[in-house]
Length: 349
Ligand code: Q9C
Ligand code: ZN
Image (tube, rainbow, N blue to C red):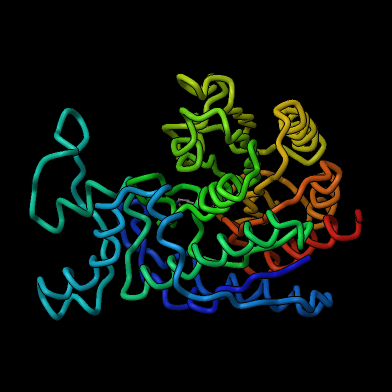
């Protein structure tokens, strides 16, 4: 299995996120990617590449909105222009165009723009956020190209910040650019007529779902904590099946907090059956490992060994597969859990 590593991830290092009325330390930290890479190295995954840091903007601009991209690219400069003392703080929103306010209002105010594009107050933009995201996008696109050409059966993109909560023109859930969507679009552009995205992160991949909700060429399937009690709360219910041409091409399998692997695994069988029925010729896995029992912000009960099983069950789909790192916050164990998926996938032949 080919590993693609994004070295610029470190440039995105948020200081604080809003939680229960105060600013707390970010849980989505640079150490996460380092732990994954360290563990992959220890396990003997030797084919590690560092792709170019500039993503193909044609792909990025086909998945994301141009004005949103311009906002992200310039956000830090605008923040510093407001007050040079802002360099000591991260950008977080404090006002949102909800409840009948105009999301399309032609406001020039920076704070208003942040609130228009953000859907939570937990995803700080820092000085290096844009560079880190763009390099992550480049890795995801490169992984998809290698898998699309048939030169690799599987590739794993070790990157952060994660992507699956980011939509065409919004960020949140620690995500800014949707790497899994970029990989799927790249596979489509390379000639794969039907591409499936399987999201196994604990949290529903609302951004990915929304990007492909009206499309029949990309199936989105997600197994996640029930949004009735779990983040991101406002999307991820079982009755969301797609719209228009996309009707029938989104599948949500919400599970209650406290679910253990026997029940989780049955959902994976259902998800993989849907991928097979769809006739996908390539697969993108949004690989969050926050379903792990000791994850500090999640509620499933998977053991580290279960992630090896997940890797081999995904391999049994026999599809060219791009894995993209998403969540996972029990930092010490997350490297082991990601490497277990990679090993399970690789050893299944
Ligand atoms: N203090 C991903 O796993 N915050 N994002 C929850 C924790 C949002 C998770 C509150 C969790 C987002 C990619
Ligand atoms: Zn997650």
